[in-house]
Image (cartoon, rainbow, N blue to C red):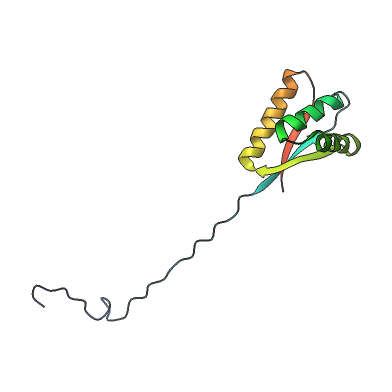
Length: 110
């Protein structure tokens, strides 16, 4: 064919071309629990303040979490993406050290 496009018969080997569409499946990010650990030195009022300040809980909910930590040794403050959980743990630990309390905050995969 002079001057025109040669579409041939579907491909270099004479077959037909198949167009496939891929469906993208987005995986939800892993979530992490942020936990406070009990100790015998950090005042209950300080723990309530931490929960209110860093986890945006009201006084009643913060008190419930603090009592759970006190009675069970550990309490969940929230569930977040890795980056947010890591930031919260760092903020709580820095705040506790600044106020000379041994309060421990950790994160674990949900």
